[in-house]
Image (cartoon, rainbow over all chains, first blue to last red; front, side, top):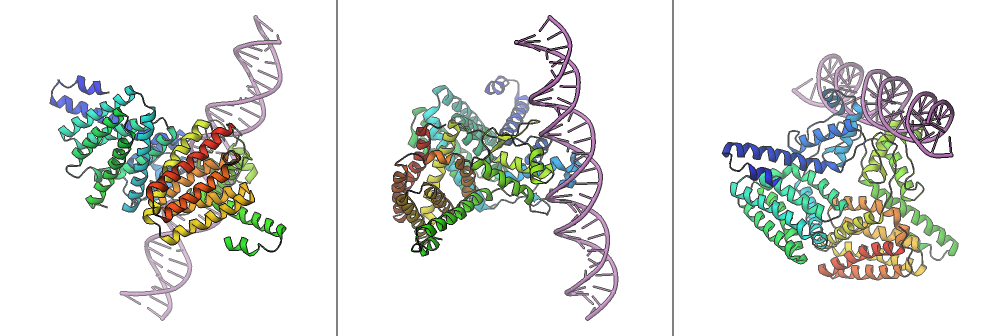
Amino acid sequence: MAAEVGDLADTGPALVASARAADLGQLREDMLFSALRGVDGSSSLALAIFRELAVGIVEGRLPPGHEVNSAELAREFNTSRTPVREALLMLEREDLVIVPPRRRPYVSEVALAQVREIYEIRACLYALVSELLIQRASDEQIATLHDWQAKLEADTQAGDVDAYFWHNVGFRNTEASLSGNRELQRRLSSLGLQMHRFRHLSLSLPGRLLNSLADHGRLVRAYADRDVAMAVAISRSLVWRGYQAIERSGLM
Amino acid sequence: MAAEVGDLADTGPALVASARAADLGQLREDMLFSALRGVDGSSSLALAIFRELAVGIVEGRLPPGHEVNSAELAREFNTSRTPVREALLMLEREDLVIVPPRRRPYVSEVALAQVREIYEIRACLYALVSELLIQRASDEQIATLHDWQAKLEADTQAGDVDAYFWHNVGFRNTEASLSGNRELQRRLSSLGLQMHRFRHLSLSLPGRLLNSLADHGRLVRAYADRDVAMAVAISRSLVWRGYQAIERSGLM
DNA sequence: ATCGCACCAAGTGTCGACACATTGAACGTG
DNA sequence: CACGTTCAATGTGTCGACACTTGGTGCGAT
């Protein structure tokens, strides 16, 4: 993946930009898909609807409070209400919509207090990831994290906030998978799905990228040194600063 | 609740025993119910079926691998297949059943490796609970934990393993709620639901009760002293020893 | 103008029906 | 007797229909 971007590096700025964009789109798709992986609906129709709606909510096209009733969606998707209902229940389980009994379902709102709760959990679980990763990952595997780190560095220099965000997600997913705990990986991606909803808040602050980048660098170094205490501390604070950025942005 | 048992303490052994049993049954119901709380199905029919099956699986009446197809269950419950299907999807979400596409659903198996993964997460999250609890709980709230601790002590002296187990669950739930993080509480009870499936393994070892009891005592003391480092360490090891007991039992 | 009540459109939970997939047994062939 | 094929039985995913609820609209009474 790194090779693809690198190979095109000398074909001119425009091509590089579009190649980059395509690459990012692919990455974005992969990351959202991996987050949606944990949800195995038996029906592929319901799953397609679920993914469509989930992406819509996460991207903000379906704003909080927006009504998503099964009848209208069924017409829209040219299916019966049964698969739509199933999809809505999946979305409810991911806390993306609320389905009150006998009432119309709507896209859930996210309060700052809830964001804080989620970040508390995330910080804790990523600390666990760091701990397990150091115990179990090989040097080669840790080196792959270094690759991601390099991308983050490039994005920071280019000032490309969006690219930074998605590469950051990639970094995180890789970390989680290297922890060797699949259950942990699943729970984290479920949390991640919710996080994507307010990501734009998290990276809007100036100076945040540089800060985050420095932390990533120190984290990878701690991994290479197999320094558990250090890695855990950095990992925890890395997540937590994400929350603080949202809090300080005052946008919630 | 403690009062009810206490008030009857001098009405003779038989009555005490039956009162205790009723009390335990109530507690068991409460705890399972609270674990099932997080799941809000919009349909109350589906929810009833879900709970019925969930309890059946957790209690072992529906063994791993047992087929749970929607057609048969629909006949059994005198409903159509629609609510049953919904219930099965909820169960899949809790990892209690597996619903392969176009194939009959069946009760999921639990491998030791998976149990380990879950315990790793639990240990981590309960450490977080301890940390938050010390930050946020009042002295009175911490005192309620002392009440639970007293029950555990009584159960140990009586050698009542079953009572010990459920009171332990109560202790844990109280801790989680005192953390003030509802999201955390929800995720933990979802994990707890799975755990109940192999609880009989965890408490079968002799000497385990005394060990666990001592840990609980130290934990409550650390809470009272607001000793975060100590509480976190105890909390983590408390959960972890539960896993070790299962591992050593060699029954998986 | 305001309140209360009947009424109606639209949505929800549930049902029975249908086409297709899967499974296991019967059966013939080597 | 082993083995692949055929065929019915059973289950799944999806559909359209039905009764009941809910939320809003308009109308009449105050």
